[in-house]
Length: 282
Image 1 (tube, rainbow, N blue to C red):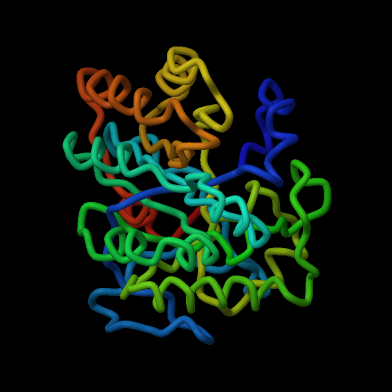
Image 2 (image 1 turned 90 degrees about the vertical axis):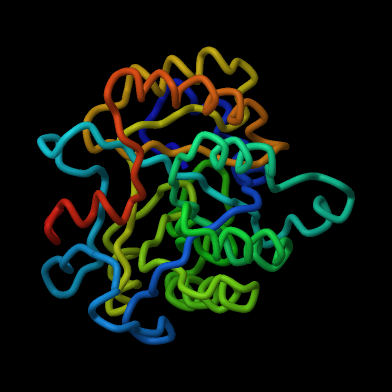
């Protein structure tokens, strides 16, 4: 989830066991038009980036810097395929308090949800998938990495990458998310050309970020707050998490950062709006 921030690499070594998730709100938008990802009417289809050479899956990192002070908060709803026993023993891979804070503050957001998380929390996934304040996107089914050496995460074989993404869409819909977005976030944020090629033809745009909150495993909310406020620029995409067990400070950070960014003139938008502002280009 935080591939290019060296100062938090030490804590990220535990990502394979603990990168986790989100709560009780959602967003309804059409899904990508390809393969098992059903199309919606063109008049309502959400914006995507144009594929790269040879149909290569496009990657989006941030919106235009010259289209006003907009910022997109994104939250990864992580649960890996092997974490069922931990959930059964009482570990929380959701954070209803954070979602309630976003609602109270009227902050739209994009939630990248793993299919395994949706299987574990179908009622919460359904809530997220039917609340227009939010939009739900794909974060794989297993939350296994699509490259080697990705913060200790187990890896998905290249021949199974596409199926893992498709399975996630199946889980999202089965949980009650009617229109998951045509956006995909690589587990750990790790990808290479092979991974991008594996998803060719699915109709998804891979969504990264340009601001790392540092909330994963953080205990100092003030430090996370400073990192977000120092990093945000017009068009930024901020990556955060909404799990009580692995990102316990995030609700406090949001409650502090949101009013300050608004004081600075920023408007909160979903990822789809930033991609729309890009006009289909990276």
